[in-house]
Image 1 (cartoon, rainbow, N blue to C red):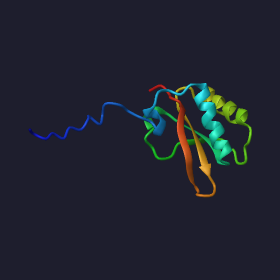
Image 2: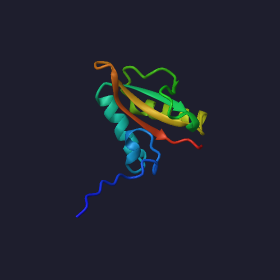
Image 3: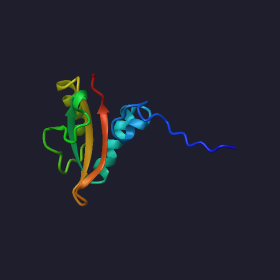
Image 4: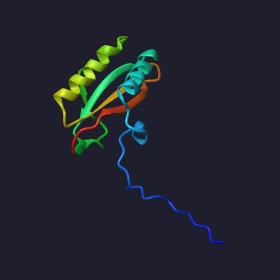
Length: 114
């Protein structure tokens, strides 16, 4: 019996961030992630970028990070405002952990049009 080592075609699916491997999030899933970021005391930050540049390391930040934010509705409203202002851009939410000085969470909320 011959051994085969088959690897899938790495170009089959283009992905953005970790959660892009999962089914699309609905509004309840997004709210749960925002609640998780706030519950951990992380600073929510919203970023956006045109799909043609989405592999760039740095995305454009929408306002400053929401340091000390405890109201989930404020974060969700700002996500919507960013999406309205840049409907063709990807919009992602990042939770910055000030203790470890790293990203605790990061996912694309709205996918832009190419």
